[in-house]
Length: 226
Image (cartoon, rainbow, N blue to C red; front, side):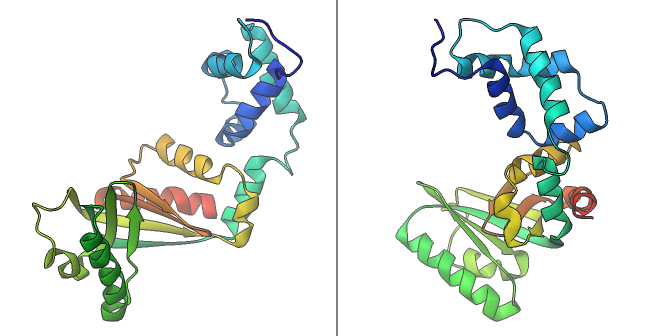
């Protein structure tokens, strides 16, 4: 396969991939990057983006080093993310259930009613998620009867109990912090915390974990939000 004038260069492809992984900027700052190892990790994607039959690994290494030198610390993706996180607030809620139901009209109505009644009854937040085939309901256990009195366990696709939610509330500037979700999930994964699920809206990011992991997750996010 030969390249043409519309194909991107190795340097451009490498920069694009690195900008999608702002967590790497932190590793570069502390000198923890193995350049050849990172180049090997990026090699297949660089090859795909440059539309070449092959790429020289040393060229990718050089592109990584150039990116590290050229990027402005003040205007780096990681710095924009950190600025938003410093203005974010963090809170945690325990004793949470996560119901997964088939996506049917009846269960959709139950989910909406549970959302309304949970707020009326206890002032608790509930979250509703939908895919093509399923409906997810995240609800405090003290409101569990709103679902369990109307849906049998046989009808449920899945039920996860003893969970916790850790919520990051961010300012509207989060829209300018490209790579925020990648940055957060990579840092969480790096610390060995397993996520059950994640819900995102305009300014909120909700992480769902087992209660045993909640304190560690909260600590990781607290360090990031300052």
